[in-house]
Image 1 (cartoon, rainbow, N blue to C red):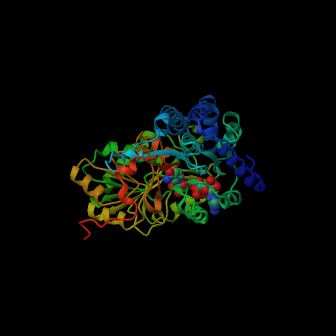
Image 2 (cartoon, helix red, strand yellow):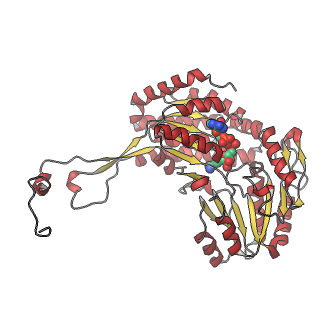
Length: 462
Ligand code: NAD
């Protein structure tokens, strides 16, 4: 995949602005045509996309279809079917004082927007935002991840074939290219990636007062209460961790469990793991388990593993040549362990024993608000207690990782895990300016003549 020459980036930006001002996207029919084309891009090239995802992440096809290709096609259909309804002007609630001025909310595009996406779900986290941005009538620059080279390369090839070049462009590159992009004035930036880079994006956007949506990461905890359905809980947690080799923003990052229940849970996780991989998870080429994206990512996660003071329950095998890290559960992990020092973003699952649910809540509240908080429990009181006394992007009981795919639910973080949200109508809203509008007839002055001087002193103010 070739990077976009830095000196071309400003030209691309200018061309997109001309494209936006051409007014093509004022037509909802043209937006729908572009959305349909994006749907065809996905459908016609599903096999190549699957191969590209596997080339980048060593990921099994089942996961590629289940987590990216299928949801993207579903999103394209949903957006296509909904855009007429979403884009319609809305009337505010009736008020006697103002209804005659015909107040209305016009749904207008923000303009020319920038979408920066990460490597881990390189299709879904690019195509989903693009669909919403186009539906809302924006011209779009896409900056895919330089680490998912096969997918980024394929999108670079296919997008100009299917979409209007005046309205959608791909800019490839790493830090220098993204820095150049961020120097330019955009009308909205949707950034998905790490909090570290999120701060860089925020600072760059602030220079132009550009509105931003930040979809970041963090350490998403799993609280396991002894009242849970243990076998299901272990299976779902383990799946949430092994899928994409733990490189999922909403992957369970660590478990909090009452100390006396820790071994029971650890054994159940081992059973779940053995059922998933009766022989071995190694290597990624067997089509059952992903690999780490880059040697740097491998080294970072391997270092976290090597530094732990906890007890390995199972796993621990690594292979640098294939960037393979075996799914690994570690128990008796303390708060100051390497595994608790940063978002793991790999297939390691530390268990931190706590005294009780209160201590688990205090542990979560002492840290950054996570992107997701998972709780496995059947006890209604426990569920209410944990959800009512914590903050997180999402609060999910007895399920793991799949809530971003649930239609109608917003996907986003809070504070350090992000701001704003997307998927479905939320993406459309993200890229839409709600333009207050009125058209007041002259006869309204008969009712509101009191607003004009000379003012008469009313009884109440006398
Ligand atoms: P990253 O922050 O390294 O990269 C994301 C994007 O930022 C890439 O396109 C990259 O080119 C660009 N970038 C990197 N360094 C930059 C710099 N100095 N200046 C400008 N741009 C720069 O993230 P990643 O490693 O691709 O993805 C992993 C992170 O993303 C994890 O923290 C994960 O939790 C998070 N994530 C969040 C979500 C979400 O929806 N909230 C989804 C997926 C991943």
